[in-house]
Image: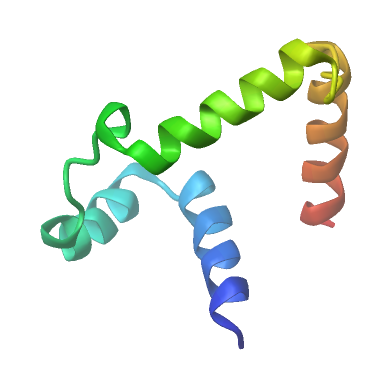
Length: 81
């Protein structure tokens, strides 16, 4: 199984796992999880700036929230089958 697939399976599991299991998983890895401060991450901020500029210039067209929500819900339902 690839690392990408393992990550996806863990993500999906954590989203639906009961509180006790989520806390147990967190306890196992909390020492490795740093206090990430996105506002100090220069690469992340540069990416946000690039994407914002692309949107403002019309290079990238956004989609309405309702449309995005429908796509997300449809994708979620198809993965549960």
